[in-house]
Image: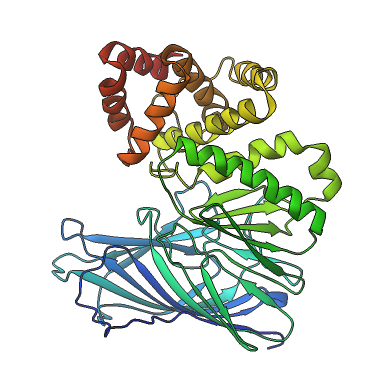
Length: 423
């Protein structure tokens, strides 16, 4: 096939690799062949998973147009597997596979899959696409066996490239003429593979953060302006938050639709011009601040109503950045906008994560409630609350209430719970 990219995920270690050892996180070891023009991928994947003997089923999702040719776990090819349509809102084109692992006593499960297919179907506003001009594949397809319960995982990838396409993945990078090696140095929550013929990269350091820009059209002036704004945002987060990840990738996506999104260690933004950024710099600041804050706000299950802890705090801390950089008047305009847009929406408590009101509840109502909480507590105690939530790895509303009670007392905690339930 023409213009193939061969991507080989390998494990390099100083000690021998033993599949009987325990592991802290799932680990992917994948070999991928991709033809962007033909929308074709061929994958040979090993996935090692810490085994929970209390669970008798392993499930994963793959794009429905990918045909599994071989499948085994722990070298066993005799097992029960079922398949069904996706039950996850952001993966409408996926198939759900379930394997029965009852009685398995190993400390880990090693899945081995071989699959291939032409991916030609995705939603109109999908952030995962494949094509000659631009390819960006992540869990929204998904192109690798993805399970949302595996909130964090690791991977290593060696990319053997053709002459035309420049690949890019999050992680450390070592390159030669015909290959590139990527490694996720810290656990992350997606394997986003990007490639195009025009892709370039630039590395910078801001404070203790290593910044990697992957871009196609950004000018030097725009890169300098963007870097300046990143420096201001990270300066504030350094004061407000405990130390988090120190590596950040920002990818200029060449998609025309689908919007931006963040992963742990990476931000993917649709292409924008110097003029657009200059004329809308304050809104872009809020957007960047929101996505960067997900380096800290990511621990709650994003498939449940508990996602308010991720998105609500990410959006409100972005508004706090606007207050610091652009003044109270501009901040107040955003608060009033949130108030108007959340008018008449359902309460945050136990809202339908897949419902029509989910966006308004997450991005308008929840930050508005956090504003009310900050007004009640005071700005500095609210910042202490954020610090305590992060340092304690809070991921549920129950844990949030416990931290809030310890900091502000039972009355304030119950008041805020009532706001979540009835406002």
